[in-house]
Every structure is written in structure tokens, then in C-alpha cells.
Length: 413
Image 1 (spheres, rainbow, N blue to C red):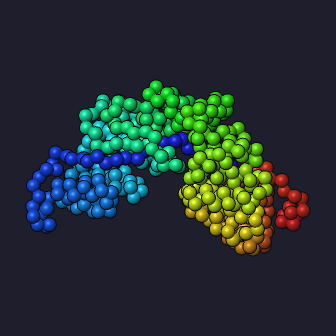
Image 2 (cartoon, helix red, strand yellow; image 1 turned 180 degrees about the vertical axis):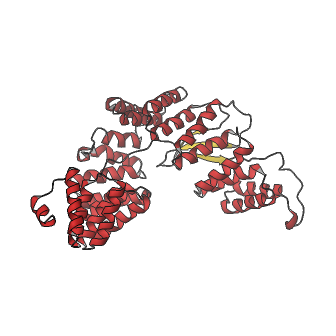
Image 3 (spheres, rainbow, N blue to C red; image 1 turned 120 degrees about the vertical axis):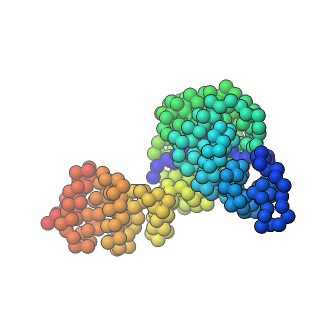
């Protein structure tokens, strides 16, 4: 089990304000068969204003069937796809729209955010850096709201024409965080401070960058400054509770973690950290409760399933442990730790051939995993395949595993 990595803070939502292209004012015909692309686009816009998302998507689809060059319909439909969390479809529509309007501020920003969510960080950074170079345009098509990503409270509003570029610097800093460019990230966060000198989220984001470059003292200072400007900042409390503890999370500041959860009860990482702390203390039932909450809030994180599987093992529930390891593998195909742990469960269930398969996958994704070789040797021995079992045992010793002499004598006869 490892300390759960916390991402920086950036969550923007948009308010659609009406987007009317030059070709949106054509006269409508009376029959449905002959209605123009402009008609369907205007209907879609009205539906979008009323949050009739499915109806709006159908209207924009109809518009583009009539005229596949109707650029504004791609932009509007991308916003609908975002609402439905259809990120790849939204990205495709923004790509098409930007072919028509390559310098459109809102489309570039929206595409950058989708690319970040799809882990396309270099491409996201390219969009954001282009935004920094572009002059302001006169047209506003969207209003952006910044929300607390767990509490859902709006704390800032901006438009692309407002002249403030701090949000772009912050976004680039977050991209560099994901690219492990910590020095660059800090520089961008510093630039963001020029327009938002008292923004607690910026202090937290810069603190995360400093923590990852192992400047613990400076990171703590930033988290503490965030709490000066927002004493209920849950992420700052969360990070202060766990900073510098490494793998020894039994020593986390439990009080700060509890406060973080009280202040922001929808933050899965806080529950996972508290669960890990309880796991290390041997409080497995309490750990399970928090892992359940973390997964209920975020079922896309494979580490949560791995950790809960280990907790189920300690609570003598191998079937639930197996299910969690399987869920972790489904989320992350190359998750060597999950294969190793699931293989151990299969050994206990005397499913030795299946265990060999899992250990083989663990070795595939982590070739120097001495435990996987050692455990696969045991599985092969149960299958009476002594020669390959001995080869694995020797390999595990070469990789640093301590092989008991009696096991070596029994397998390598």
C-alpha cells in the first residue's frame, strides 16, 4: 500500500450564454423535412439554455446532418457531450470547431480541460500556452465558474475577455504537476499569484509541487497560508495531516484528517488516507468503513480497490478481496501489485493454475518482482512442475528474495 497521490485543484464549469454564428438567422421553412440547419441550431440553443441536454444534443445532431460545416453546432454539441461526461466525443467536436476557428478562446480552454481529464497533458499545455499568447477577443460566449471539486461551492467567476490570466497560469502549473515538472509548475503558480495573491487554492497547488520536490518545509508553509485565507480548506488540512509521513501513515495527524472530512465530506482521498492510517494501526474494520466511502465517492481509482482488498484479506474475507483485486485490474490492466495479491488469494483457494497466470502477469508488468517469482515457484510446485518451480525460485533469490533453505530443498531436488 502506498500514500495516495493528491492532484492539484482546478474544477471549472461553464454557463452557456448563447452562441450565434453569422449563418444562424436564415428564415425557417414550415415543413419539418425542409427545415434548415439554422433552425435546428436555434432550437438546440434554446434547449441548452433550459438544460434540456438530450433534446439539445438531438437538435445539434440534426443541424449537422443538414450541414456538416455548421461550425457553431460542433461547439455547442461539445458542451452537451461534456455534460454527459462523453469526453472523447466532446474532444472530437472541439477539434472540429477549432479547425474552423483556431483562435477561439473558450474552445481552446475547454479542450485543454478535457485533454487534462484524458491525461493528454502535453496537448493540454499546448492549448493553454497558446491562450496566453492570444489577444483578448470582444465576444463572450461562456461564463466559467470555479467550484470546490468536493463541496461544489462556486468561489470565482470569469470570462475569457476579463483580462485575467491567472487561471491559465494555474492550469499550466497543474499540467506540469502531472508531468512531474515541479520547478516549472511552481513558476506558473507564482505567475498566477500576480492576479490572485490571496487564493488559497494556489497556495495548495504550489504546496503540492513543493512537497513532491521534497521541499517539505516550504510545502507546509504554503498549506498553512491557504488555511490563513480559508480556515476550512479541506485539501490544505488533508495535505498537512499526511505530509512528511511517507509510508508511516499510522502517524498522520488524525485530527486534521477528521477536520478535512468534516469540512469536505466528498473528498475520497481523505477517507483513503484515514483508512490507510487505521490499517497500519490494525484497525481493519474502521479502515474498511473508510475505504467503502472512498470508493463510493470515486470508483475509478485502482489503488482504492487494492487497499480495500488487502483490508478484506486481514478480515479473512478472501472472496471480497479477490473481487477488489479484480476490480483494480479492470481499472488498470498493468497493475502488478493487484495481480500479485490476487495470485496469493488463488493460492489460498487452491486454484494453482490461475495463480500461475496472475503471477505471470505480475512479472510481465514488473520484471524484477522477486515476490512474484517466489510465489509462482510455489504455485508451480503445487502443480508438480518442479523444474520450472526451481527456476523461479533461483530467479527470486537473484532478485533479492530470501529463500528458506527447506523450501529450496523441497523444490529444487
